[in-house]
Image 1 (cartoon, rainbow, N blue to C red):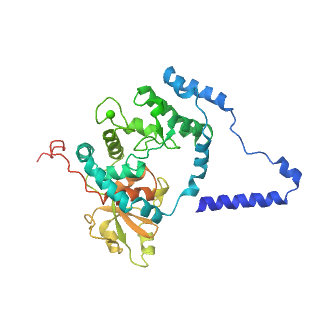
Image 2: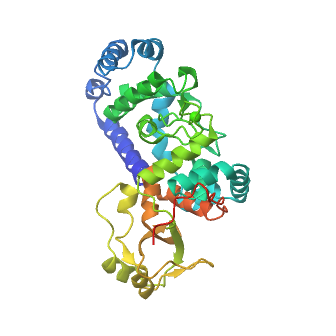
Image 3: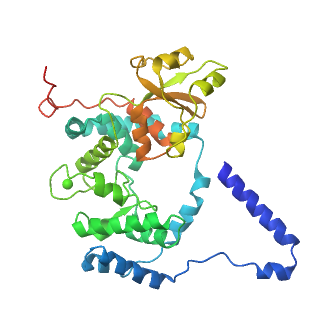
Length: 359
Ligand SMILES: [Ca+2]
């Protein structure tokens, strides 16, 4: 992997150079830069800023008076690149038989509420269940790290500190709303919260109180979780009834033709820049793309981009880019799509379905 390899090379080069240097020079090497402000001082500034932003004194006091830095958070953040694995392995592991079975069981168990959510937001229940499965193993593991302490740590000691500082203020706003108790506000070491793993800013934008109990609870209410996931996808452009993509095969030697017909995109997050520009399906067919399995491709004038993922190729539609908005990694978006394809969608209740367009 390029990141770890380059780090290793740098580390080896530094060690080698150090070995050649006279001891005196090595001793004078500056230490790694430490955060410029001591933590207690930094925290005091943070508290003042939170109050100035209109967050209540009660919340600031409860959340920040005894907060401590979490060394494990820093460690995880610094080593995450090294822990990634190949996309083929990831897909094998995340979309295995056991996960598919659990996903189907969950879709059946929650069929009524999923049908209602799907009717309101226009996102298939299979996709909602797949996102839920990938994010928190169907709500069984949504993270045990205290969100405030994780975000404080990342905002204090991190190269993306401004982003995490903003997320910390958002987390305090959520506490202020009374949706969740401080002791229950938990998630990943990186600040992603609850069963859909929303960052606090996503929670404030997209989370839903679909069971109408007055609390938007993405930690404990499956109904709220499903509606929050569906609303996230809808607000980011999910098109009802359009699917996400298909696995395809390409003929040998097609690479060159594809490269000139459909160059890689130049804007967007890293995963988007690894996708080709969109072409019509009829153009892809003329380049030799052929769907794998029994699922046929949609209408010939539908457009799609090519994603090369490990040993497999996929033609993906606009909804795929919406999955990348949730988590910008092909391993993730493909796992969601491939898992969703194996989950029958709950029927959308007629009464709750949007009215048919007038003739
Ligand atoms: Ca609720």
